[in-house]
Image 1 (cartoon, rainbow over the protein chains, first blue to last red):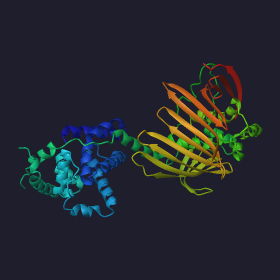
Image 2: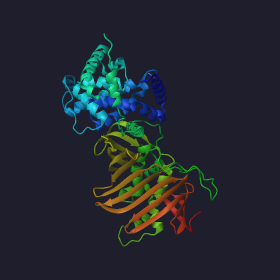
Image 3: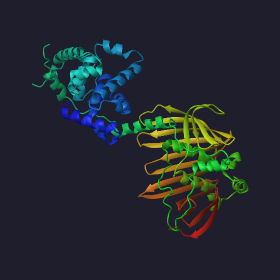
Image 4: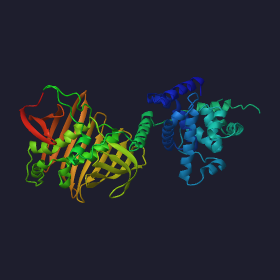
Amino acid sequence: MKDTEQEILIALLSKIQSGDLTVFDEFFALTKKALFYSVVAILRDEDSSEDIMQEAYIRFLENVKTLDSNKNPLGYLLRIGRNLAIDYQRKKQKESYLEEYDNTEAYGAVDAEVDDDFERVQARMRELLRPEEYEIVILHVINELSHKEIAKIMKKPLGTVTWTYRNAIKKLEKGLSEYAQD
Amino acid sequence: MRKIDDQKIKSIIKQHQSDPKIQLTASEILHTYEVRQEHKKIFNKKKNWVLIPSTLTLAAAMTAAIVIIAQPNTTSSGTTDPSVLRQAEIPGGTEGEFVFMTASSLAFSDTDGLIEVFKLEEEKDVLKSNSNTSSSVTYSIEETLDYTMPLVETFTQASSGLDFTTDQGEFVGVYNTYQYQVQISAELYIYCNMTFEDADEEESETEIVGELHANENVYRVDGEKEVDLNDMETDLKINVHLSNTRKISIQSENEETEQKFSYSEYEDETLVSNVEIKAEVEDGQYSLQVDATRNANQYRFEVQVQNRETYYINTGDETIEVKVVGRHRYEYKHMMGPNK
């Protein structure tokens, strides 16, 4: 995330904290993509992801006054979204999602119906990567979060995040070569 | 540790990246957030209201609880008292609506013990003559006004302010134990439980079960609140059970510039009478429209609130000046043509 965007988000946070919800539109516009990608990386279902997004924003608003007004609130928002998504998944599967999440080798086969370029690449990435690797790549590459920020959101040591990301990149270099432009 | 060379992969991912089709909007989130906040607040706060002294009669207590006592009318004829209702809604949000709807059911009903709650002793005979529900009875506009004006008056006055206090705790009622108590006066209070049903994408529902205590009478109350998350509309429906076979069903509908209350009286699930009051603000103009149906008789008229003692009724054919001469007692003066 660019420094200017971070500054804007901090300014918006301050207004929301003072009860000015007229700026929520702008806050939403600046954060929705990041939250969406973060949640969909876990759930792999866009409809459910939007439900989780809504809940995440509401939880954010409910707790906004407790946040440090000098810090970028995106990390907090993504953390709520991630927790809600994992919780949702856990309930949905009626088993310990985290266990499966940590042990699963890959998400599964590519959806035959996928025809969108981005979705095809995403599907291929999910095929190649473990869920945790996929989530870290999404957070770093698409949401442009630093490894340090990701470590905080995922509550993992920085070294683990960096190591996982490195392994993911190695897998992707092999698996996504067909998408590389000449 | 060697620096990760991820530029190539980043480039591939970003090249194939497209904006996600997110249907969710900021206004949807804010609306759901506000609905939840309202639900948290509702019946979860304590207001400092002055309770009606218990020495007052129940009739006086109930009316006074809902009605702001009118100040001496110093407004000259032909102008409108600015202190009366100028907004198309009962104040206090859903909580105010709930209190108004439940308590005003007593103003609507002219049945059995309830009539004694609202009417003075000398009015009973008049009401008994009006409560004949035989299908052969034809109701004149004045008879229709007799049973609709108490509601109009209550609605108008309640719009200026509602006095009640809400407490959360454990309240033992006649039919159950309840979480909330809404005290309107010493003799008039509501016990209820609210169950928030899970909201889906389009609406959220809250179930209400309780009982209305009016002096020594206790009436079961049930209902539900629905919030349409798409249209941002809130509908409240309350049933006050007068007996095992008789009930008053009150429904509110809120839209951006109008608020509508519908009162229906049922006997053995058969509709006996219905009064619909719609308050609307359009282009800065406030209007109150009443539809009253009893048996085969149907009247529609507009109410112009002059002040708390004078109302003008426009039926389309004529204008009737209504003077409040006592508690729910009125004098009618037929005027030529619609009031300007």
